[in-house]
Length: 179
Image 1 (cartoon, one colour):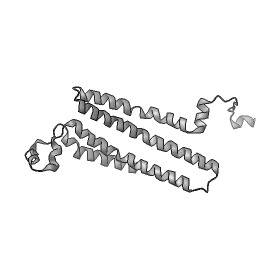
Image 2 (cartoon, one colour):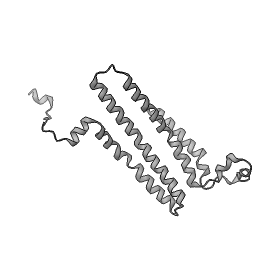
Image 3 (cartoon, helix red, strand yellow):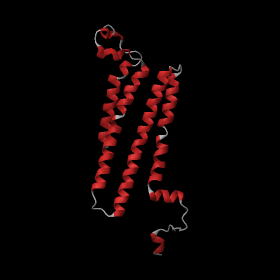
Image 4 (cartoon, rainbow, N blue to C red):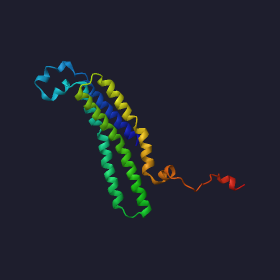
């Protein structure tokens, strides 16, 4: 599984390096005369702000795959009634947690894409500084939000954190009982 993720990440980085980075900052100047004749090379004249939109749109592809797999998981859990009710409830809870955890990065990516478009349309002078600050703040919230979502969606965790239980379970090692 890690190998597949590593291979996909390397392919994504190579794609962004060879197909998106050459167009940053106005594109390649050697083919400027070709742009007058061929419409499909007009992307070389796009400025750096809009070239990052393509990068973010490509980064949505893994989340689309996650969404597809999440829908398949929901259908599988709902169609297999061979489990008892408690097991089916736990599977639904786990599926819901995984789906929500998959959509948190989608929301952060969408917010970053919105900020890019917003800063690009307003033509703010310190665009790169504003973009870097906004994106780093949003993307750094993912590790903070994921555990909170896990706690809120799983009933045992939610009970431990939010409910004050009167039952105190002593933690005694097993070997102490045998003495």
